[in-house]
Image 1 (spheres, rainbow, N blue to C red):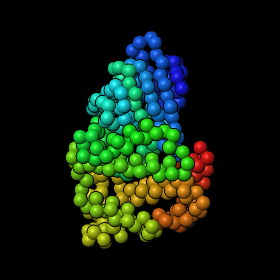
Image 2 (cartoon, helix red, strand yellow):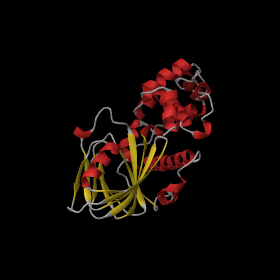
Image 3 (cartoon, helix red, strand yellow):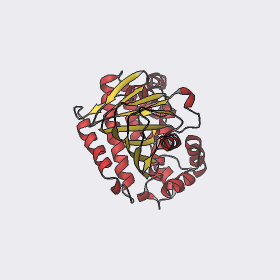
Image 4 (cartoon, rainbow, N blue to C red):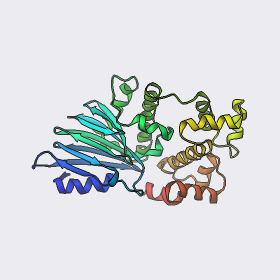
Length: 302
């Protein structure tokens, strides 16, 4: 589908939130192909030279918390966020967060794949956000050599993103991206305290236990609850919040999986340690603004 500058501004703001788009020439015609699988959106975007700015005044509290991955296919993108600038060239990618001011400068005609997904799909501490955005990932990076071809194949094969297996494919791509992030964090940012890493691993392995909490974790690690809390706080998140967030992320993922659409919602919750349907409905709505049933219906019928 083709867009002139007015149509492009309206379409971009509708999908990505309010932003300012400035073309570098009067003759502006953009092309866009898109696909949606649940709450993951992909856009194959071909544009002439232009600049995009999403400043603090453009960001609303009601805007969704999403990451956007930009894979460069032709031309280049100059991405700025958190005061850091990176150049994304063909065969490389970078991510940015929709609720943090950013700019995108396309100095020449370009083509890129944009993948937009909820930020809670990235199972990293909130403090990690500043360290993973506006950071170019290329084939020269160890895991980038695996991740880049995967996203290039997604760009080249939009037609496969249909049917019940499409969600699993995109979730696998996001998991690969998170692995790349984790490796970059280990190199470019202060390390997560070893105790917090061990605690996170224990939490991941025991989400099904309704008694999972600081006391159980501290006993497993042979430390005091106070020491556990102090070490975990260095990640920017409390133990209880991390447990709740990780459970909600897994439940949300399973509810959006077409392969599990016949599974009762109560069974999904119980798999992650929440046995009360009323409690599950309440905490899920607190996290995502709708009940598990409404979320599953909306995503699977999209």
